[in-house]
Length: 282
Figure 1 (cartoon, rainbow, N blue to C red):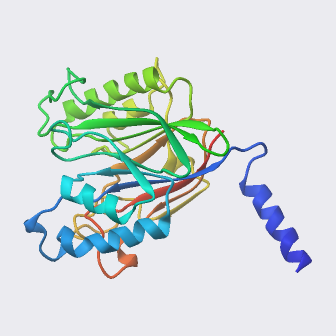
Figure 2: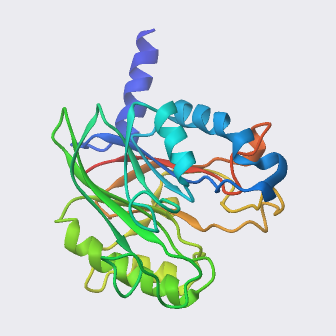
Figure 3: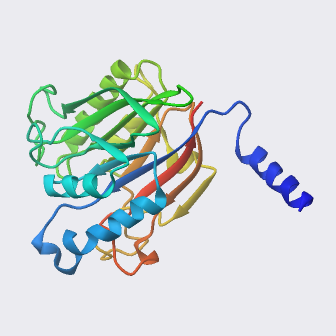
């Protein structure tokens, strides 16, 4: 037994840096809207499994996309230990949401806001040939016990217009720099771009803005299917696209990231894989 404790202590020392901050589990999840076109993959067949998944993973913070009002209401009822922040893309509580969920007993919400990915980000709008309105929801959270603070944001970029994606990345980085106030930064989202795209490069660009890193590349351990969009299993692991990302500022240590492969369970949770990461704040 003594040897076991020594081994466990060595493992903990190895995976946890000296003077490390608190661990945070982050979940990125495009849950797919309610659509009759989905047949047996309709929300009403999946919703209980999604709730069970969230309870099992037990993230500190969750960023979701394509969340309609009925879905938001259902999840808030079924996950009462989370608070939910963010406006709908059509204003107020209307239209699809890209909200932030956080454990309300663990964190205090110090500040938050929503802006639109457009030329006029402070009002309901869309530009740059985007197919839809899209929003960027941001928060500043403080750990109730440790006092540690971090900036967490969630978004969804346009699926049609490359121009919209590129300009959304530029706008997001400018606002991050303005709002984050030097705090550790985490950004989740369905960015509808792959790691070879200009949009992805703009999110990582350090020139004049907060530098960001792709958690999939910086994690000590990366597990699961690399691609995150699989179209209800219609794409093989080689064909699927990695378009859902967790970005962090370089001062954050990413221990592990998991792209939760849909083949692990009897029913697919969405047409995207949920992605979660265990990180250590600086």
